[in-house]
Image (tube, rainbow over all chains, first blue to last red; front, side):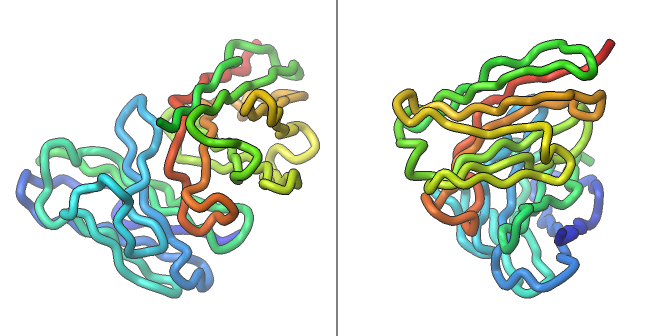
Amino acid sequence: DIQMTQSPSSLSASVGDRVTVTCRASQTIRNYLNWYQQKPGKAPNLLIYAASNLQSGVPSRFSGSGSGTDFTLTISSLQPEDFATYYCQQSYSTPPTFGQGTKVEIK
Amino acid sequence: EVQLVETGGGLIQPGGSLRLSCAASGFTVSTNYMTWVRQAPGKGLEWVAVVYSGGNTEYAASVRGRFTISRDNSKDTVYLQMNSLRDEDTAVYHCAKTRDPRSFKGGWDYWGQGTLVTVSS
């Protein structure tokens, strides 16, 4: 199975901050990498697919980059509604696997 | 409008069985990869099983031989039959559809709200 490692596990940030979350795969996954946002008690919400494509309806302050084994999710200007947990997920091979999550908290 | 609604969760003793249902609307389950993903309390996301558009199935190693995913095309419903349940199967179970009808590449764009399964004596 492909292991996905996110960093950091949590971070504190202020509204308006630029936030970056990284995700590393244990082997190359080309650009088969997706990002989700999850709020407490809710289902995950797809933000970015295929590493850098913004899902319909997702604000443009979210962006993704990377290929191979190293990927980044960036929030250009953190908004109050962005405080949540973020997960990366590889879709290169079965089983699909997730990172352990990055919790973005209010500073 | 696409919707996924899971039902069937509850409290069950170790070794017991439970069947979850996921009723879909706004699209056809038979032409999509349909997946179950679970989340243990306070933990991350874990893929459980998929039924492909062609009908083949695949499972996570942790549930293989105990869980069975299936679908009823006439009802646009996906099921997860869970047997020989263990404490570690306690989780919220979500069904989800792939963004691309016949590929995992684009991730899962619609998820149900989830149904809680608690395995405890």
